[in-house]
Image (cartoon, rainbow, N blue to C red; front, side, top):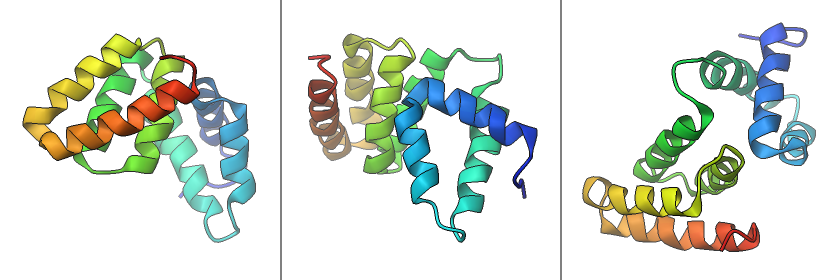
Length: 129
C-alpha cells in the first residue's frame, strides 16, 4: 500500500486537483481520518497517478468513460463530482447529454433518468446550463 512520501501520491493529487479543483481535493484530505487516509492515498496514487495520467486516452475521453461506468454502477456521489470534472476536462454539455442518452439502452431508463436529473442540477450549479 502506498504511504506518505510516495511520489505517485503527490503526482496523483496534482492530476486530481486539475480535474476537480484544489478545494474538493483538500476537503477530501481534511475530512479523512487516520483510518480512511490510506484510502485517499491509494486513490491518489493508483487511480490518479497510475491511470488518469497515462497517455493512452485524453482526460476528456477518460471523463466520459468514467461517467458511463458510474451510471452503470449507480454511484451518484462520485457521478456528480465527475460531472464537474468532465467540464474541467473539456466535455461540453452536449457531450454529457449524449453520453447520458447512450447509457439508457445499456444501463436502463431509470439509471439514465436519474443521471439526467443529477447532471442537470450539477450543470446548473456550474452555470453550464
